[in-house]
Length: 79
Image (tube, rainbow, N blue to C red; front, side, top):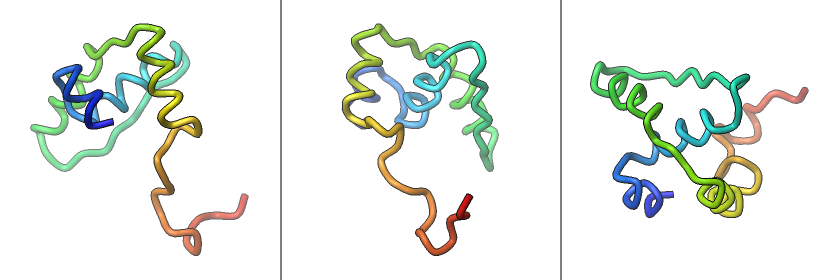
């Protein structure tokens, strides 16, 4: 993802948010942050656009939508 971010001239977080925004009008990412700088970075992600080929590339790199679990298995809920 770092290479895509570098190519797009943005951060990896902006790629992730831009990808989410490209998934449809019914998707509203709600990123958390601890600083005003990150809020500005997150807002700028709305200007990151992808071609259909770019979205396909990301989909092929992360077919499950993520690179790994956020938390270790013992603390994950069992739905």
